[in-house]
Length: 314
Image (cartoon, rainbow, N blue to C red; front, side):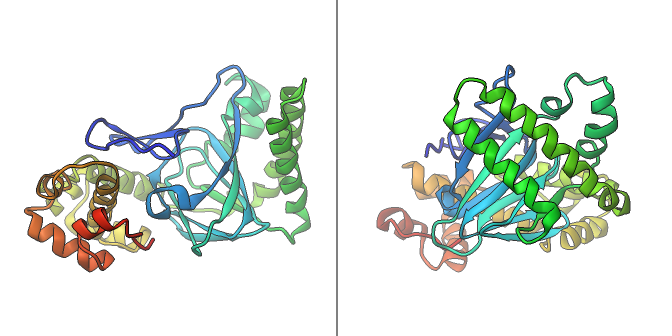
């Protein structure tokens, strides 16, 4: 795994395959090939710093299934835990984060594809009738695939077949994968139609929260105020607090602290920046304040973590 110094640029590299743009929270798929916009890989959540992959969104849609252990996705509608044999779908533009749910060494398979891989060019009947009603629905962020539900089993089977085809890469594998994603999407469209029509999410609240999260992520090293966070979401201080607590179960400053601590852990692990300078880079007023907060969160001092190769609990 390659992790770049977060102080060196505006992107963060976690698995060597993806980057998260700190100014937008958009995840960029580094290995994307415009000629064949499908990608599949194994994913070990415990290989992310402290078993945690930060909040992000992406233009492509994502299917996944768990081969071993448990993983947890958190979205704006709550927390979703998936166990061995289960899978799911994460929609385009849906904010989410991923972590190791149970310790150990969980393993999942993720399959990423742009909507145009299913429907072709933007303006045709397949895109208009079957793809955009799903991928363009901001209120439809996630769908769970259960291993014991007959309607879900065929989709899970097709995902496994596509992964095998992609990794074997025998002649014609692109055609075989494309044929299967068409069959899978036909089932998925029918399966989710009633669910999508029944959802009445507060899309304006989602956009407001996303704007405030972006502001915090961009300015985590600054001395920011609640008024500034609320202004980013064009709302009052009260509405700012309510939105964070309702959607993330955190206050704005608890979320800010979470971001700062994740930055500090990664920098402690991957740089030799002095503790005093590191504290300032992560938004703490001084190294004493940073040390106290770090110990309260993780039970060790920053120096002990850096020199003792101590694993911070996720």
